[in-house]
Length: 128
Image (cartoon, rainbow, N blue to C red):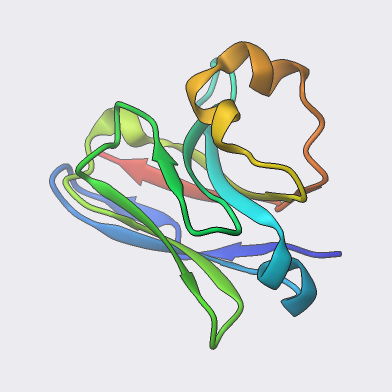
């Protein structure tokens, strides 16, 4: 199973980017999904997740700036990022699992100790 991210790039502070994660249709339709990021020298952290029931959870640092959504026509998990700042610079990863990923956004301890079934290869976002 492949999760393929795209949309990363370099942008100035205050700018915006939209990330895309293409998933196999059967995964997209039934799994819980989310975006995570890892900056150099830091632990991976949860950014935003969306469950199969459509409920969402956002990290405090991105609330009001990022929006996670599902594009059913494209089987794509999207992340609209606005008002970007240098602290958002990181490799962004898409993930999918049969179980909810919400707890992984609010609890770094759970993220460190939980095996998520599928991860993408990541797409780099650089804000200067």
